[in-house]
Image (tube, rainbow, N blue to C red; front, side):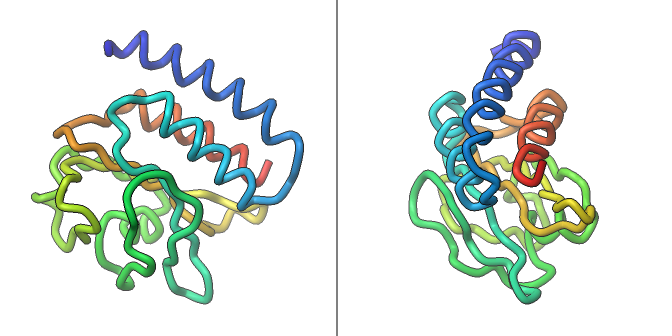
Length: 153
């Protein structure tokens, strides 16, 4: 899928999610809906889910795909990198990422997008894995950042 096609798909998906999440302000419900839509609209998504920062621990939240790691070791891996830097992390090859946590050996690339609450604190991350290498780019980054902003909006 070329960048223009992908950008248009993200825009359509954003509009769909925006309408659906108006039904509730509950973050878990919004996360579950975002996962379901993203996971089924992008064929290169292998695992799609949220990890929530609860009592200084990173615990799995709503997700789609194979069984996930329930708790991620503090300050290790791509998800913690997203939390600690407060920025989206795009990893073309997870096997080259220092401290990568392999919940599934089928994952080869990953994007992690921080989720900010209304006080601008990171409270979770959206984690998307792909079986393909270099699946994620700036188009994914921009599209997903816009989508996760709907959780606490």
